[in-house]
Image (cartoon, rainbow, N blue to C red; front, side, top):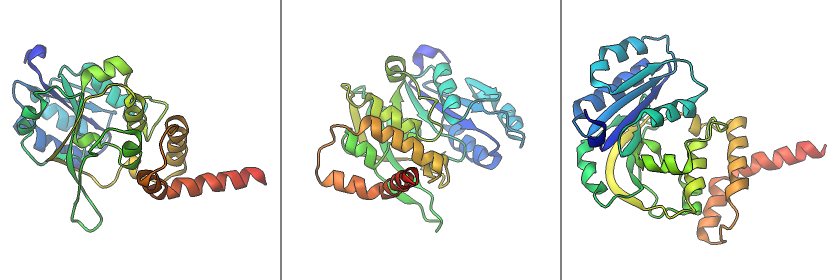
Length: 254
């Protein structure tokens, strides 16, 4: 596989999620061809994941199994090793539910970001369909951060604006989208349902660490958002974060 011919790099990161990794691999490998490569970055699992990766290494353009500093450190490793014009992060447990080659024609006009629809698992067992944001604006991103499992990112964006900020362990993808939004980004949204995302994830948690990271991001990037219906929705959507902030203020005052 010649690097110059690769259109898309699929990157999976994994740590001790053998069942999830198995599902991801089985959804990806049958779809690989000369224009699509697959990379797996493992954080030195001890549950059999590495043995599974070795079984499929002949299908991989790159794989590693070594200690890392967290999710986004591993994702950044994938970026540095990827050869494709575009990168899709499909982490262990996430699966492709459509033929990935069907998405390639949507890249003919060279968007910087192509965001597709995604199914998200729920407690009930029936996934919900999540559509991509129609416009790439700060308020839209704050309301619905682009899911990396269904978003193709031009690799040159990382080269131009930097990779994920590893000081964020939970919300670095949100920080990245907001860091580049003020630039002339060519964004494209598609109703094509590309993947299914596992319900659980660090980004879905509402832990102290998560609130701290989101507050840092809001403080840095929320300036200039105009008061409108989206702002009201934004406040409601982040009522948990506001409540957390008020509790912190009260604690500091006593």
